[in-house]
Length: 324
Ligand SMILES: [Fe+2]
Image (cartoon, rainbow, N blue to C red):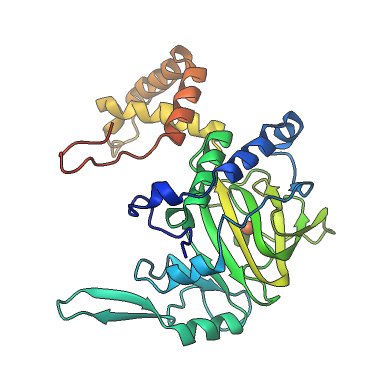
């Protein structure tokens, strides 16, 4: 029986078996609503009215097929647990065989993996959209909706043991529950709009009561802006959910790419002199002021949005060219 697992682009039967793109269309429709769009970046949104049919999105059978292949390796496949002995670097569930021709082949050690999952670990597959076409179609839709390059991680858990504990993310998140259910508890941001690197473990967790609680059931989504603390607990196991990371563009990103154009000017590539010397600083300051006074900030913003959602260049073998 066909499962929707495949390495994207590698399956010659894909055109006959690509799952219905309706799911990504429904996700797009959810975020097309003007009331919803007004809430983006401002608060948590729980989409529970019309649960999506996720039967075509990701099945346990498809996940099993992937886990028995040699297409994945640690750390892309990993286990996490907040409290037990498994550190985030635990890779004891992976084994490596060598073929007679000398190829190194990664494979799961099933008993060790099951032991870790029994012990409360959450199974995580980073960038799972590369393996599951329907997840990729949703990811692409979200990229267009939010004007940024999104990605998707898969989480599977069998116990109440939290994978992360209370934390916030430095990017927005859309989580889609596929099977089982999870209870999300939210606290208000203590650092608004954290930037990459401003990780939650560097800051004190909030001591104030939760501002919202959500029971996420199959087919339901929750949107979480960056900075909102959250704790997630599996209620109805086993739980399977996909979390889409949405690193929305910031004004700082626009200023940064504008400043990067100064690298084309030789004076900006120079090192500071050993002695304090102000003459060059005056030149630098003049150039920076000129950059921001003569450039169209809106045009740069538009260019950055286009760049963020553009496909990565693809090779076009056997021609030694890029695919147009
Ligand atoms: Fe998170």
